[in-house]
Length: 291
Image (tube, rainbow, N blue to C red; front, side, top):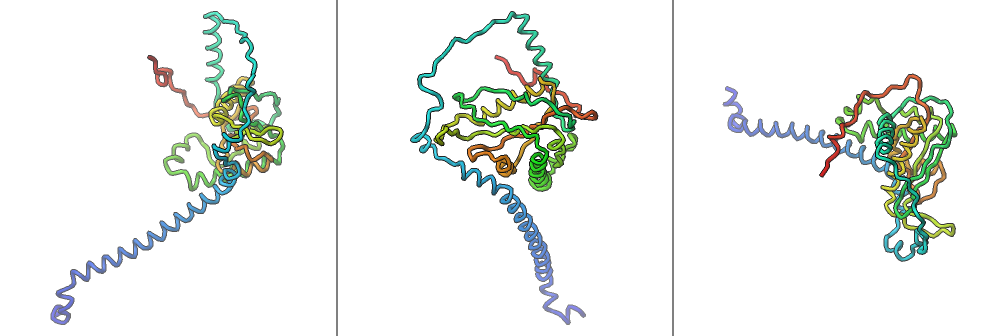
């Protein structure tokens, strides 16, 4: 009866059904595409906002290599004097003893995020080797309560975006056992913050630019020695990255355009209730290859 009343439907219902299914799927995909586009716009806007200041700094400090080669100031005088290296050779027994003592000192170092507010001595900054002895770094020691609060606000703002948007599920899952999040209380609790800036090029007293060779690796070496010096002094620290907050912090500290913030080290005594993850370093056989 139904087929006699609706012969068109009787003959073409499979095509109508397929068309209806495609119509439903099309609407679903259209809505999904809108969500995806909206999500992409959020990420794009977040990325643009977080990197705008970084781009500003890069534009300020961008310098073509040809210009450096044409108008460079030598990093060192051409007639630099060389003097004898004074060295007292230790005995084999002394070498073993020193190596063991140093290993025990460094092996005891841990990243501590719970600090005491007790004051400590400022005499902890050390020097390190650098490419062509340009020493392309600036260490800024901050103890001012208000400035530390400003720095913490910038870092936490960037870290929150990092945890909620930039970092994927795998990353945040891997960090959970370490009990870290975007709240960086130690940036205001620790009595001192050491902010390490790399100098992408140097400046003479007259304002001329000097090329800085290997500034990245030179600053990395300096930071490694700094961490060891802090440990040797009996203090604790944790490596904190400014993310995209570097340009804002640079302006707060009134640093010149040729400097870029690399790392932030809170320094002080550990809190009485400080804890650390029960982790163990790899055995020497896992990291050393000999020939």
